[in-house]
Length: 552
Image (cartoon, rainbow, N blue to C red):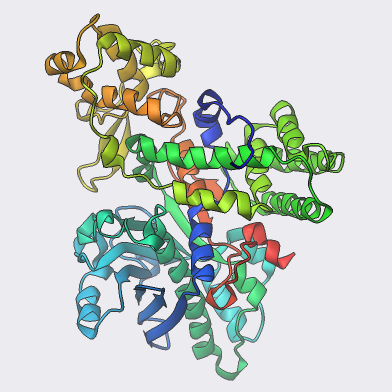
């Protein structure tokens, strides 16, 4: 039994403001993926490179594991500047992609060429696991091509201002547009951790993009051209624009969310329980905290909410490093540092410290990624033999936070969630300004809990009650889930006028492993993925690329 302190309570962890302050960690899905690729010695090749001198055509990148292979099929298009858009309504992109299950045949390439470039307007098959698209960075693409073509390396500072040469606007999976359902791959060891197909897609896109920019530069500069310096190459990730379509995921998958948070909280509890820290580990932790500060110093945003948060994070991480030097290495230093952070710095810095505390402890943390998958169908059944009185006690115990709000006021029911007719994706409406509230999705958990509580009869078998009140079934199911999964609920009113959907996006994306969160409104955000990560020829068992630590 691994020693650990008491886990943090859901009342503290599951507030939306804290979930919106999470950072990547060792159990983020990108890092889980790269550790597996390295430890199992997956082999990479490029069986097809049919790209012309201007950078248009298609390519295939394959990765081969102990039992299976997967292939990114990439299409690069001649896209006029005026047609380039990150909006979901776009119909053309600089590049389009799919992750094929296996190595595609010539017939597969022809089939995919006739569908993948059209994205939603085309159809892929159950032989494909994801569908994606990306656009070039207007600020960096031509600059990097021209620099390399003329024999010069681009400026690192200018690269870091953006962090990527292409930005994806979607990475679809799990059955969308004809792709394979997750159930087909969920029993595969390499796909058991959530979103591994999507993370592999983005990682291979990054490989393709960096090869493409060098290819175009060499065709343009010929003998004068140079390849991108390896450290500069590693500093480039893949951008992503993410909007409201992702936000309801955390609400719709309460048991899965709880496993993610539980793994993170268990990792923190284990590290806080360490009494004696050797000098070498102490020095490593200092290095990781320093790199977290460097990341914050390089983190740019123009958003009026994010800018002061970043400045505060920088200042508080500087203060954290000063506190670090006063710690007693033989007297629970990480517990002392964590408890100090609770009383001294804000949630963003607290959660950065939490993630950083995991870094030197692969033996305590990494195994927890195996606990972040759950078969949600096993917990779908309602135990209808319970009574309404028992249900009421469960609500009072686990949902007191939902009963403290007056949902009759406009501010507490200002929004409603619905699915857009054009894109079939979640959207957020203003209840008192827009039509459509009759199409509201069942995401108002706090309000519906309160409504159920006020309508419950006394001492009635749940089966009887739900026969008469079937509209409450989805909420009863959640209440019973909360008994087994304490971190299953976001403990805030998701209809409130001040609610920030970007906090839900930030939470999910932190588990992906994203960095450089740059909100463009309260409803969509730009991020960077795999920045500073090793390329296939650089993969090792040492998972030490977080925040560019390799380059320091």
